[in-house]
Amino acid sequence: MTPTEAKELVNQFENGTLPKEKWTHEAHFVMALWYCCQLPLPLALESIKEGIKKYNVSVGGQNTGHSGYHETITLFYTRVIVNYVLQTNTSKPFESKLEGLWQQEFLQKDFPFKYYSRELLMSEAARKQWMAPDIQPL
Image 1 (cartoon, rainbow, N blue to C red):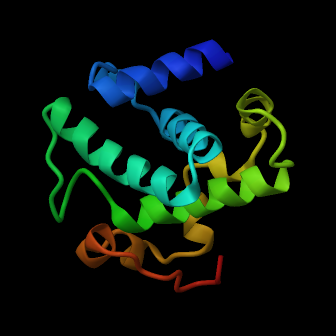
Image 2: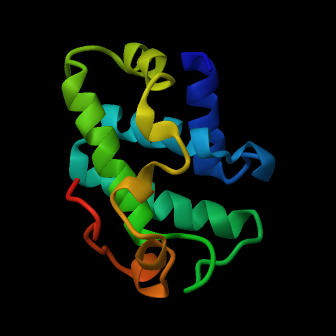
């Protein structure tokens, strides 16, 4: 994905016009990386959380105890992305961080299960509120 494509993805995400089939696992990371590079952390986190909830509704989804927005996964991955941003020299632009994103281990879909049991991470409680990892600390 090019930086131009990433910026367009974020724009469509914000406007609720991103086609649902383009809201992939990788697209979540691009969006979160964008916010973490462009905004102070508290604003980035709020934009990520509220943006996902709003986008889910815009494509006909719901944010319930069983589907849609997941607080623990969102906060877990946001922390991972923030760590990535800090480890890759904060003075480097978004473009260079995007380029390096594709080699990161945390893009693997099973990555959170190094830290969480499936039972805890897939629970309704974890969907609704932050739950600390139960296998190993982050």
